[in-house]
Length: 272
Image (cartoon, rainbow, N blue to C red; front, top):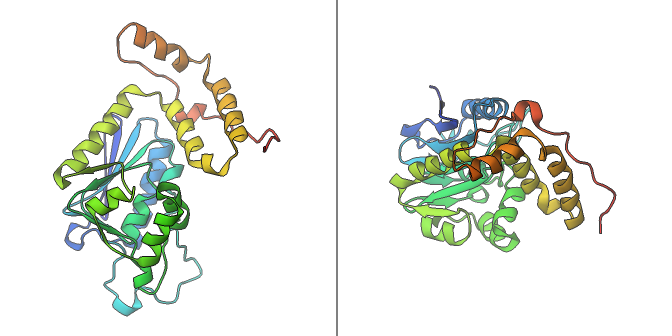
């Protein structure tokens, strides 16, 4: 299995950070494996939803600090603060982070890249990098303000505090707060619901537009929505969805993300 386990069942890919004896602290090998797994999930039409979780009692306790003072030594020419070359938001399938326990430092900043996060009541959460002489990473300065707003993001990133599950949920870091034992089952339930009931191409274009929406004007969003509807309407899935509902049966969607994902709409020149 290595540092990351990959399982695919009934359209749901489960990616498990797999260093339980080290509380799944993050390594370079784990980053490479996670990047490869995200690429596979993006390209494989058999994957309809993705769940990212951790083995054992933690999600990810941050960077592996076994090297002590050398952990954050002089970076090489290939260094990137991204940690994973394929961010979760670029995967054209929903990514649910099932934070089954502690998510600290890089563990939390990676989870911020997911579309949905479920928190464990017993977990501890925080972006502690400023307390380690470095700074937040993995696009946290972009993802976190989008999720919780600028003021709360400033509190989290500039203080380097650890928060309880209840505090993290109150700050808006997750959409559900559950007992640790229920986090992964709940994430899998939602992932299966997505896999069974939604049109993959519809989900893929919705996800991309959702992530970029805060950088667009209302007029640009409307333009993209219109052009993407033109791509979807009249095709097999747009016919099947209403028919399945009227006939009270599960839908059988046919369009494949790998083949039918559209060229992304360009701005129409209207910015006000």
